[in-house]
Length: 144
Image 1 (cartoon, rainbow, N blue to C red):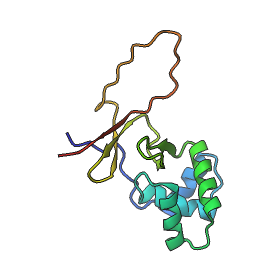
Image 2 (cartoon, rainbow, N blue to C red; image 1 turned 30 degrees about the vertical axis):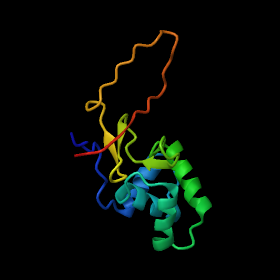
Image 3 (tube, one colour; image 1 turned 60 degrees about the vertical axis):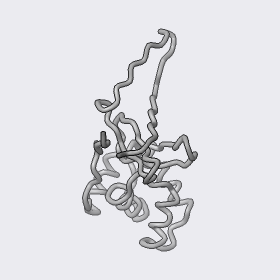
Image 4 (cartoon, rainbow, N blue to C red; image 1 turned 180 degrees about the vertical axis):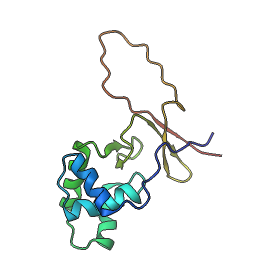
């Protein structure tokens, strides 16, 4: 089974579209935030903060590491991104798919795929006194 991406990148969102998304999320649309969103929402696939910083160094010079981290924090708190810690490396990646879903990591390629809830059924039979607020399912293996 090849994992099917459940959310494709938004091909080439315009600056105006990114500004609108930021405003709808209650985030001020600064030039730095627009630049970071352009990369994260349109080009990147589960990037780390370091990936984003490398991109900004090449495309938006003089943007500080602190600005990248602060912007990611703002976008996560605004619900535009999800922060996900990879259990096998401890690296944090940022996911534009904020809907409930799971992840599959291909050991051969190092690529991370989104897996829909329909592709991975999870049945919990827990005591009534346990209140689950979030579930992270992380699958590792290889695709053939």
